[in-house]
Image 1 (cartoon, rainbow, N blue to C red):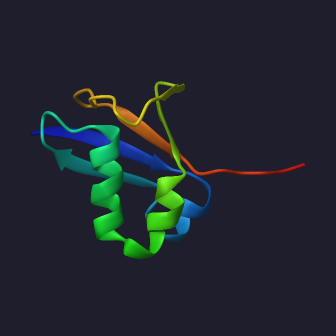
Image 2: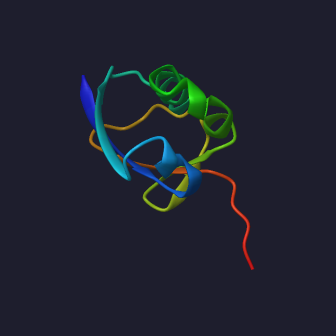
Length: 81
């Protein structure tokens, strides 16, 4: 098991706290994490599907194996002016 810290932005904060810590399996991918969050909050599933993931200010592929004790940022699409 390993612990990751999640940081939520935008519309995701309507479904989850701004920060959240989860204990996950050692070989968890970003995609597996998204599926886990969708099971926790099915009403957020559509938004989670289109989120980008970032570790240390770098956008990462959802198939990446999540490192131990990382801070993972979930970035939903946004627009602004």
